[in-house]
Image 1 (tube, rainbow, N blue to C red):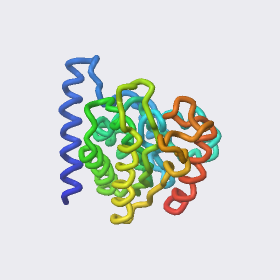
Image 2 (image 1 turned 60 degrees about the vertical axis):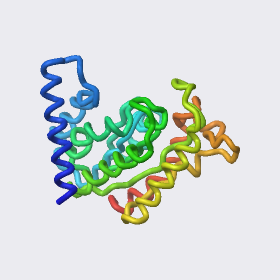
Image 3 (image 1 turned 90 degrees about the horizontal axis):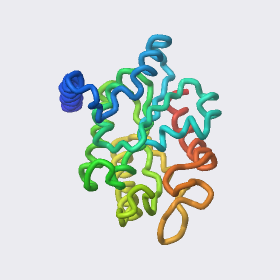
Image 4 (image 1 turned 180 degrees about the horizontal axis):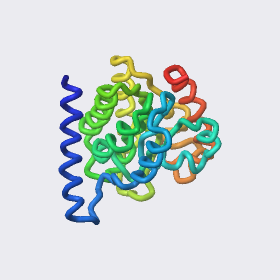
Length: 236
């Protein structure tokens, strides 16, 4: 009941903000319109798909089909719904449009990196963690299998060089996410351990990310090998 209530509150928030968008067409902070046409087309052509899996996140998720198109070509039921620059705060608002309304069998959630980068507001670990739990609650309330993933390594953010301590913040958030997944019987995919170097800065391993934040094709191949077997346990 609490999960359904939480989901209803988020839906009401979205409806309220959508009405504001009608009055100010330039306003679309959660980027509801980003995948609006693609979502409409998907639901028109295949409204029901018992094997649909949505990959939900930020630019790391958005860039996946671009840098590794074969992965999505080989798995045509996989749908990418990442938006560059977004944090967990924006995720809460567009989750209904880009995940729940698509009625997937499962959702792969990768969130938290842009929170640490302070793209939206000063970083607050508890709030970010609670936002991600909110995404999980909404998915579960609608019968969607959640697959939670770690935040990827980032020793620094090129667009926000003033941000310090990101490696410590990411490592700490990943501990919270892993522990939550384990105690709530949620499958957890640890990208971080396979992508981080062994140096004190805990940056991306050399050759796996061009800017130290976003995986390249080789980085995505590693992620695919980790996440695909987990997906297939729940969506054969």
